[in-house]
View 1: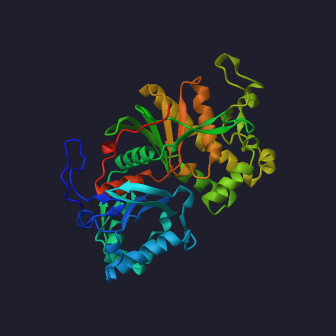
View 2: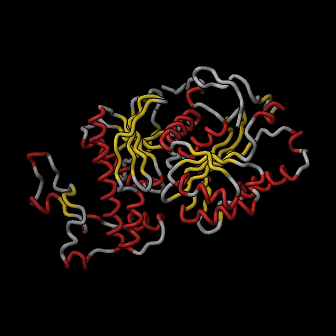
Length: 404
């Protein structure tokens, strides 16, 4: 870890420097040893962020040692592959270049694999020599505690554990700071002909509600970079959607479940207001097409005989998404917050839920609530861990200049 002194607001006052695009000797001396990783070990997915330095000085390249060779082998393996085995994937479309981190400059790579494959990951890390270069890795999420002994047993690595909600917010603020198109919203989300994805100006974000949809859901009220609270959560999240889809349809992966849902019709499964009232419920402004009872038609044998696996997957997605939207709206009302930021791997390849959440927030609040989304939806906790490793404080970044 860096021993750089810090000012009262946490900014580094000394330490490594970059000159003319190259690292000076002080950088090599004071930076944490490479490789730099941040891990968010969730209940369903492990998110791994790897920082690949691109500002290596010529003298570093010419050093001949087994450590340098191992580092280069790790770097080559991670950056030259898009997939690792059958379940590990590098999200190339999220890759970020020329990223400043710890007074170094490099590329951020974003990698994910199922938490159930942790043993295979550890064996891979052992075979590639990860442990020979570092004795500690920064990690967050429940798995940082669950798998701590396994890391030590297999690869002799200690896990430096960080609070997952602090890492989530820190990573989000950092990525948004360096990527001006990170935050976006959906305009006309329910109209396929006019629906447009638009960048959102996040210049003055506070306060905002942060809804992290992973295996379960946590909802945070964020009032400043280091001022937030957990408002509530729900156990019905992305893990629920996948688990129910596997039971109901026999699908084998999240991608397969989403593809099924995209082809399905939830109205064949759900009971709507019109099925109960014969139309709208005018007194309370409830449109006849609003879901009154999720899966409410499935008690009827003839209706069960008519539905497809795709219909069941779509109804499951709608059920989970509606529940999250309802809880989020109540939290926003209670906290008197008008901006809602949705993140988490449930939203990966899942524009159906994003557009439904966008519509629900706007409709039920009469336009008062804005649903916002982010490009690197599920990786902010891992990024926050990486920042902890190199001792970066997101609030120390220069003031951002957004176009009006």
